[in-house]
Image 1 (cartoon, rainbow, N blue to C red):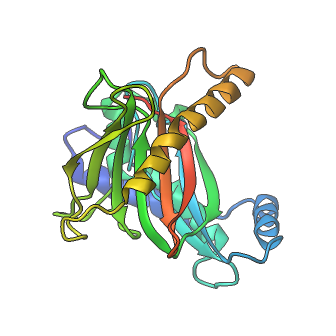
Image 2 (tube, rainbow, N blue to C red):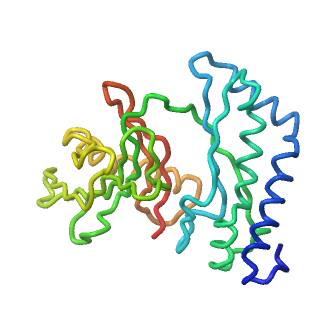
Image 3 (cartoon, helix red, strand yellow):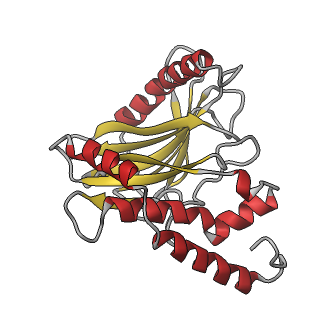
Length: 254
């Protein structure tokens, strides 16, 4: 694949597709697969699990890699949506055409990269899902957060053509806990009405510095960072009671 001329787009797409198929048709190490399945079967609360990509070719300074790789669902006891199939499909997504091109564009050596998999329960009762950055990306003078949130399970990162989400920034004007919410867009799936209530937004606003502090202390303990970074947080509001669930938090690299 590396020898294919950069302007031979169709040939590159064809070769990458063939390689992804090879990965999907391979086998996961039986010992590893057994350990994963034993861990998932050790509980009785959930049967549906989400297998998410986690590579060392994302969340880097100057390259965040958002949306390049795939996530898949496995269902315990299902003969089609198996754990092994989900793992292999996530691994194969490292060779997605868009991912290959982005890494190439930024001069990232493909052979220096690795694909891990993060597993968590799936969320069939999502009322809203979103991505939050613990920085006011539009008004640097004011500390705050920037949020993109969508109705239900609809994707924020990779929306369907023509679909918009709620995007707003929330900042503290006086430093005493009061905050202002400024919308840049509203969801095309919610009749132009805000998806989150002011109380739900305030909960995100209040929890952001807490998560920043916790991760900074963890990074210091493991000697992973010399300074604090703003966070890129994925969240969901679940069920009729709209319970907040923090799915993932990582350093935000602009």
